[in-house]
Image: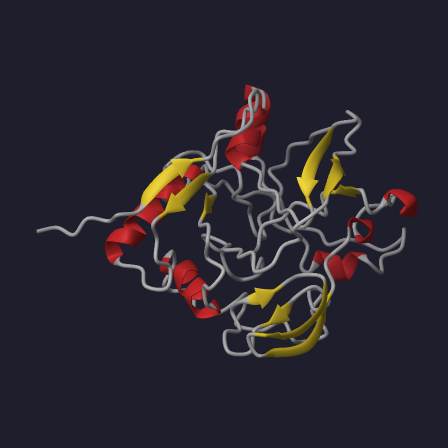
Length: 280
């Protein structure tokens, strides 16, 4: 007799007029002890909804969080390239702290922490939008106003393929106060958000918004990334020469999501050469 999972999946209910069509809440899961049947439901829920939420997990251990993430790709045993982020040479060092007994899990936050999972008397510094945007919000408006820090995927980026999933656990969040988030894209649009919010964007949604011409351009154009661009461009001068490709083109198959089979606009070529086309 087959064992049936008692986990249920509930698509998120968005405000009236919203065109957001992804995200779901998963209920009834014991993430400390996940059965094969339960994981099958969780796995399908993620690939169908792109983002899934487990509420009431404040007691979840770092080990269980890591094991849940690893279930999606058992071959992955370490964070990034098998290194922790303790090295001060890492550009992420100021933002993250590594949990000593579970180095694949990092802590991010803001302010002093007396003790947490083996970390003692640490001071967390949350990334601020002014470190990434050219024009900062005036200091007088900074407490009530914010912007997206930057859009990114959590990935090693070099030598390794991007991870299949990323997990984020809210241990403690601000209980009061909202901020006005400015898009600053010329529209004047704002969004009322709780402090400490994390936003997710659907690559499928952005792809569907493109014209057929731009969709074709996105599917067929390859990008050549410079090695460690953040470290190499920061000291460049106007006369500094960039890196050039000696190989003109590579014809690659259209990227498909390995689980759903749909066109995957988020797949990027690691060191692929330009397709030879121009775009103004």
